[in-house]
Image (cartoon, rainbow, N blue to C red; front, top):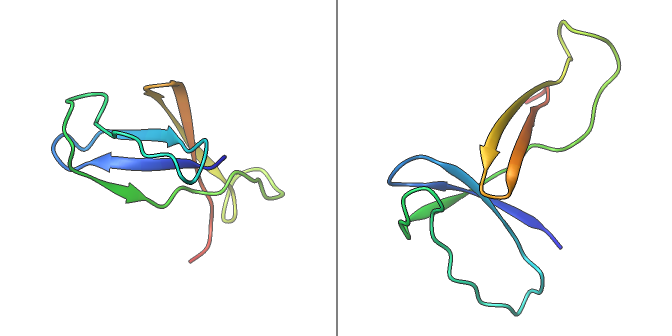
Length: 78
């Protein structure tokens, strides 16, 4: 069951949807402003690298989402 991340084009809010089945159709609206215009965002991977800080370290950003708290990990590399 993949989780898809979207950005609202009206208010720039990030939100997520869980796809239960591939043949499901779902009405998708921004939970913040109820807009229907959004873009899918490439989510970061959920893994860590060795080390503590410096080049090659993983940073994270936690924010409040429609399903609770969401964390986005920034991983090093191109």
